[in-house]
Figure 1 (cartoon, rainbow, N blue to C red):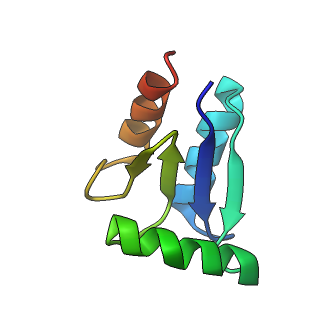
Figure 2: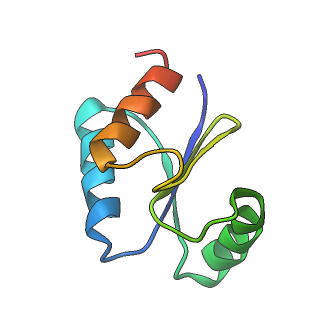
Figure 3: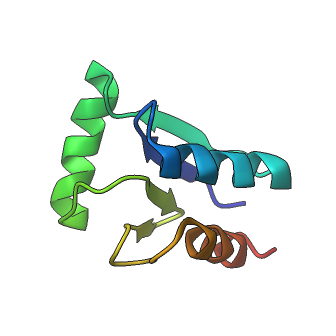
Length: 87
């Protein structure tokens, strides 16, 4: 099974919505809060690859999903995640 890394900030409504969709579907993910020191350092390195600082940013396996580039809505992001996870 592919791993999911979800880059978020605490009060982001889009991040919250995506986490709720994943939780309701029973999809496990690792959440990285980019406001934390460690999360911020990790996110900075991902930003260089993704060429974006928009959240929520999602990595499924080796696929990076970035708002306004890889998806337009949180529901679209969720549907892409489901496809990548084979659901």
